[in-house]
Amino acid sequence: MLKKGPKADSISTFLGPDASVEGVLIFQGTIRLDGTIKGKITSSGGTVIVGEQAVVDAEIAVGTAIVMGQVNGTVDASERIEVYPPGRITGDIQAPVIAIEEGGLFNGRCTMTPRVEAVKKVNPLPEKPAPDAKAIAS
Image (cartoon, rainbow, N blue to C red; front, side, top):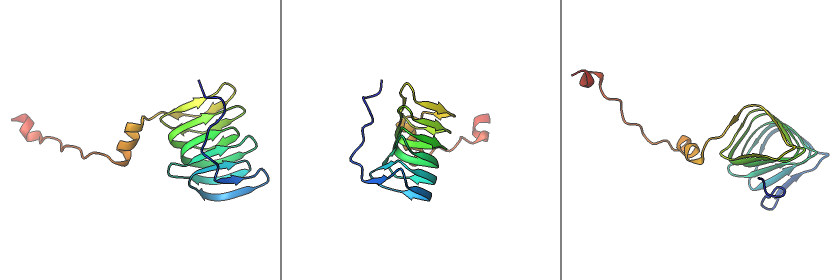
């Protein structure tokens, strides 16, 4: 069960409904998008809030994604993805925690990677060399 309404830190950046951005959007903290965005949205650990009026055609890589508008593209979140009605995602999503409230829509492939595995991808432990085939045959 989802908490009542989306929760995010204080919003440090806001893109209003009459705004349109095409390109790469890099941010820190929390950003709320209510306009039209095409391209790529990225943040190391930040939170993106896609407002009800937003139309996002982008590849998203963030800490947390909260979707109440329309997202077309991949969403890769290191912490969590939350979808609230009338939010909809068309594209592949990946996060350790994924929550879709009744009335939210998702069409695509979903991968839930535990945080431990996500950390291993970033900092893999060295693997032991495979034993020599001759030693096994002896």
